[in-house]
Length: 136
Image (cartoon, rainbow, N blue to C red):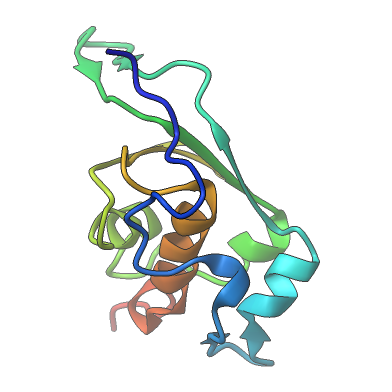
């Protein structure tokens, strides 16, 4: 049976981004509500559920969602931090697979979460200070 996104109220999301009262501790602090208002994080259905590795041909997935975010969101984490942003997203509840597609896009596998739950998982990962700290 092909996968279809969970209907409202039928998802297994621990949180939804539009109800989060979370602050990203940067200078100056950024609230998740501001990110929502600015439409800085977007989640859509994935065009392709599987991705094939360019060198190995290995099939990866399934990925149900495509997560994109603005350059302003990218500034909220450090790509040289000890914890990679895609790894921090992967460890969030309900996330099964994550694959970085480019600087502002990730493929996300999560059959039980809705788009608002995927965005909430990303915001939770973004709030982790380990994605900003660089190793000394």
